[in-house]
Image (cartoon, rainbow, N blue to C red; front, side, top):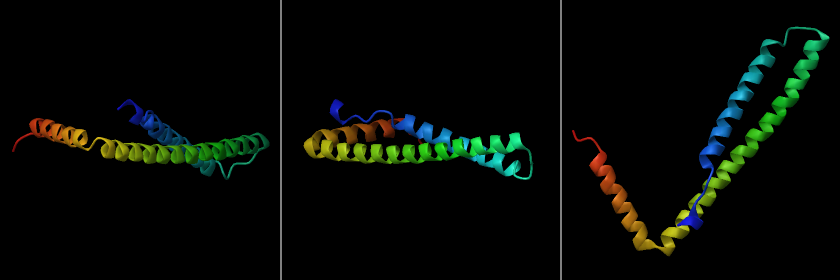
Length: 106
C-alpha cells in the first residue's frame, strides 16, 4: 500500500490555517491604523500591505496544493479499491468491527 500513501496533507492544512490567521491579523492592523498619518507609518503600512499580498498568494497556493493532495488521495484510494476489491472490503469490515467495539453502548 506504500505507493498509495499521501504525505503532508495535515501539514498543508496547518499551514493554511496559519496563513489565514496572519492575513486576518494584518488586515485588522491596516484597518486600525488607516487614520494615522506620518511618513514612517505610511512606509510601514506599505511594507505590510506588500507582505499581506504575498501571504494571500501563499494562502491561495496552499489551498490549491491541499485540493490537489485531496484529489490525488481520492484517485489513489479509488485505484487501490479497484485493484484490490476483496482486501478493501476486508479493511472496511475490520474498521467497522473496531469502531463497533470501541463505541460506547447506550
